[in-house]
Amino acid sequence: VRYRRERELPVTYERLRAFHEVIPLTDDTGKPTLWDTVIYDAAEMTALNQALKEVYALLKVDGDLSVVQHLYVDRVDFCTFGNSTPFRVRIVNAYNDNQDYFYVKKADASRIYGLELEHLLSPNRLNFLTHGATLVEEHVAGIPGDMFIAHWLGRRTELKPIRVAKELVKFNERCFVRLLGDMRSYNFVFVLTPDFEEAQVRIRAMDFDQQSYDGRKNFYFPQFFKDNNPLVRFCMRHLRPETARQYQREEQTLILQRASLAAQRLGHLLQPMAADPIAPPEKVRTLREGLAEHYHRADYLKCESMGELIRENLESIRRDIGRPLVTALAGE
Image (cartoon, one colour):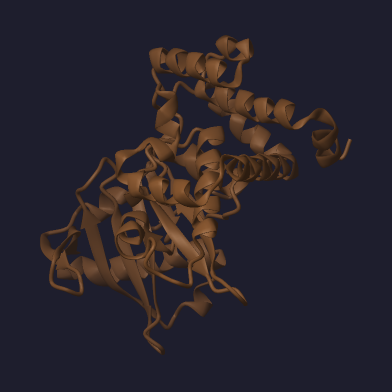
């Protein structure tokens, strides 16, 4: 509520569940996807479409309906894959056919913490809204990781291998420090930005339901998932250990800078997170032992929650980088 994430919304997740029919959605080649297009009762459609436009206006322009009158809801899709079973709403501009998406999901604590930590500690900014048990997320544009591995990795001359390798190291570190788990290749996207010589690469998470839940330390390292093995092997061929350590340290420094700039908001988030039992006690105990061994710090063994472990991770990299640098970043 303090940061205007919780808002009164005209559409809830449960309202979208009241569809009558489904039509399997196929891709451009005619192959089935994991999504079905849903159809609602004709008497509901007009009011529902207007309500979805209002949600999009809240997400994008703080509810100013005057600038979205020319938009219309083209399609609502439903996915039964995974535990979030989201709805995807396609919004189209009637003047130029430009399209955008947003998602409506069941809200849960882990996902909310994950979205907000991404907003505060990563280089990416995220718009999302909650309304009780309903969560609305903006679309994260990019090439899905599994598609990138299959069709882009090592096949595009405009992508310099070292830039792909560098970004994997940085993404790996971001996920581990903030305890974002289950980053298999279909849970993140590659964002490519043309530069004056070569394209820049960034990896962005797009699924946050496994934020701070699992007890296995390696669950928070994308490099250890089998789906990501081709990407990891590619990066190992193009990156020396000394260079990888340099990129890891760069990302640690940036994480501390972001934490310093958003110190008050981050504190407001981690305080309730430290008191929130979002993971079973046995998972917290297993993870704190793994992190204590990883960072060689017994302070982890005093932590009783996932929020406390994230705080301790930030403290570990602060100590590793050195107090003088952090003191300067904090403005002390």
